[in-house]
Length: 331
Image (tube, rainbow, N blue to C red):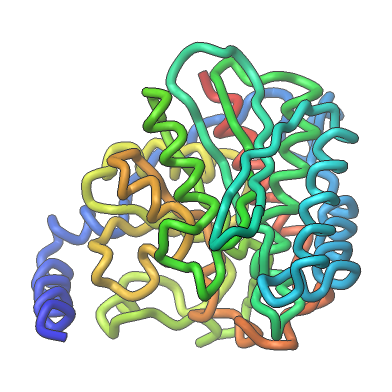
């Protein structure tokens, strides 16, 4: 509690100084033009484009057909993994299964690789499990749907740099923040292999948007003075040490579409900063950020039965996927 109070005090002091605000919010970033393959609407038809109807189909399958895909329903969780595996293959990828052993039970991550075999790796991951009491459309069928659409795009035109798309198991409680998380197993494998990681991107709820005033909340009062009160943006979340990397990623996202992009570099003591799979890559010293619609700070259906496919905005969700594809295609 003392540490939290101190962090809030430090944050308040930082926000009172204009120079320090830039360390938190990343203002003044120049948008970076997207690769021609995903040119903005109004230009010539691109050879590859994000399909929002496919995103909706994936979300519906995961949230409805495999409900509840949780630790309490192992058959549904296994079926959800089968779906991800089959859809990766249908997209043209060649995925592999990474075993995750927990208390004598076998689970699995689904991993698909694209681009060159050598070089610093870009990892984009999302957990496919959900809590037992929620369909988990936003949390996190939205992130997995993005992975599957990215797999289709990257299989059609491989990226110039090595990239891995990873669907993780066991992100939700009771295994959250434990070594049983699928993302811990993947990060540890990369460390044991001595693999250089350029960046890990965790997709954690990317489909819920609202334009109404005061539809966005924040973990600390000071943030409301710096960020919009409308929940109509996608957020990039990272630690202070990845300040420069965050600016690069934000520029790519801003250049990929007209979707507003907000960013924050802050300590893990700020609530929500490390609330997903990226935390395990931090544990191994790897650069990692979270891409999110801010979860419970915006979505009233978080971890509830109301987190259903029809509550998501697939138009804006497709813009997030377009930005992720641009990031993967950047040299």
